[in-house]
Length: 219
Image 1 (cartoon, rainbow, N blue to C red):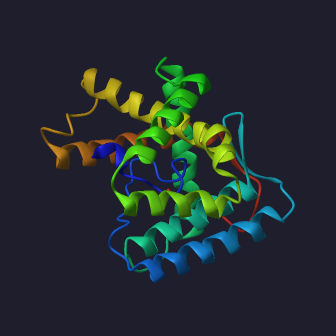
Image 2: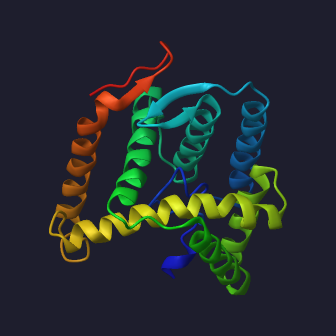
């Protein structure tokens, strides 16, 4: 059932599965309704560059959407509190760096392959008997404001490309002995992966530019 682990936004929640059965339907609906309204407000704002990772921009809209999804994810998993803007921006920067590193190591996934994967995931969800998973995915699509066709053909492939590229990078790092095998020793893997991401960030921090005084990255 691993493939049915659905996250609100794959691009924002790489490796994170939402516990969609932990909430009553009405409670879930309220969270999704609030998220949709927040995303509509964000999309109505003027887009500008917030930061730059190597030569890749992070816009104010991308960051605010990332923040909205992450906070909704906490609520859906019944986790109290919120991450600071500084923490969220650093996490987003690290996600960008991981995808760039996957490209550097030749394990990044092409958009074409991600499109194929997106359609495979769509078929899995359409054929599952898990009605909660179907309802959850319906809500995930609803908050984007896209039709089902637009979501699976345009939105999902870009998200899956990032997710799969990072997964391929992790697999290569395990094969190369940089990271321990998560199946054999999950605690050691988690610690090593956190350290790897921090090292990756530190080694590229000089090439990360922030174009606002409102958010500053912390070490």
